[in-house]
Image 1 (spheres, rainbow, N blue to C red):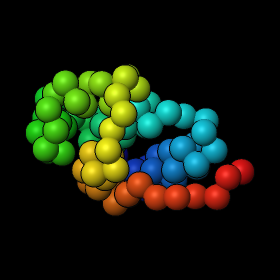
Image 2 (cartoon, helix red, strand yellow):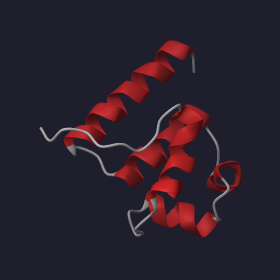
Image 3 (cartoon, rainbow, N blue to C red):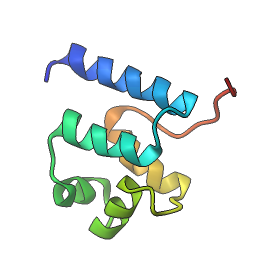
Image 4 (cartoon, rainbow, N blue to C red):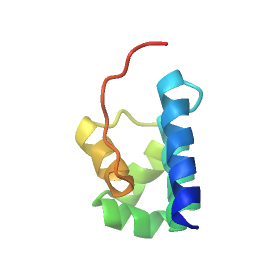
Amino acid sequence: MDAIERKQILTELQQQLACGEITIGAAVRRLRKEVTGLQQVRFAQMCKLSLRALRQLEHDESNPTVQTLNSVFNPFGMQVGIVPKT
């Protein structure tokens, strides 16, 4: 994946998240698969999360802390923030 494709995916996901069109878990899963190409085990290690925590996050079965979300989004140059309602 080149830099333009990566930026396009990141921008698309940011917009979808801001509008509520995609869940956080689905966004994390898509970023992991499409941008990094990593398996869950390696991505969890990179983010300093347990495999179980990552799996729960990707399936929207957890209530992650801001710190956890930031550790997952940080490799993509993103962080959790407050955005205006649309």
